Length: 130
Length: 130
DNA sequence: TGTTGCGTTGACGCCGACGGCAAGGTTTAG
DNA sequence: CTAAACCTTGCCGTCGGCGTCAACGCAACA
Image (cartoon, rainbow over the protein chains, first blue to last red):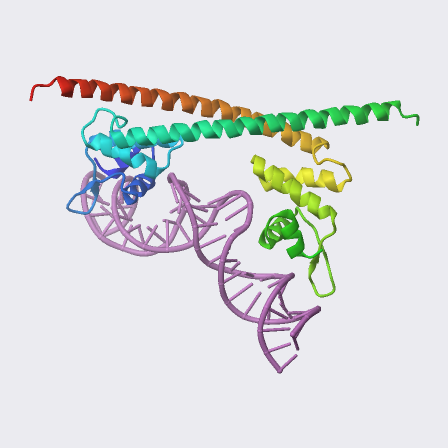
């Protein structure tokens, strides 16, 4: 499988696949003419990468999952390093949820006050004798 | 008040204040030698900018709040444009909270499955006759 | 043999809020 | 006179995951 076919089957671009390679996530063989040649297992790897990116992981965090797949596991999640990343990410998400909740409350209050203020001003304006 | 003093009083840097100026958020006068001269009201403006940035607004979103303050209001929140931004941002935050909640659930499940898998493997290994 | 359609590497662009540096002018104090 | 401590404009660097050329090589078909 050449790079164009893998890109299409994975729903991404050749540029993206070359980029993953520079980041050490995908390792194609090379044919005699220098073309990248991927075997079918790499499709699985690219799907794993894309799925984790979609969840908000960066490429460094994804590396252990790829390694886990390459080690022959049916899932990229089951290796100790992957589990460690999952734990850390879950904690990060929890943190972020907390902060975002605080932001939400602040925005809500700010909005409520602003609207209350406008109500007051509006009433004063309506009651003002012209 | 010169730029260094404003920076210190606002808890930021001169570089930041010049940047805000290029983005149209702060407008100092100029003294005879070309130095930026700020009046005290600008301190309030810079505080407003910093507070909204901390909440996750970008500079374009902040512009109406600054204009509202400049129009003489006691709060930057009370003008219609500011309220519109507040509403939009609140909706964005709610969206993001939903998606982040979904991500959290997925991470949690993934982690649970991975750990369950490792338990199984561990048990098989322990029961295997060497 | 020319065209079309693959592939290759390399390098710059993007976004946002600045940091940092260069190269200079001004003001004040010693 | 000079040093220090301000100020000015201008431009490049940062981070991540690519997009988008440019300039070229290789393959296959009419």
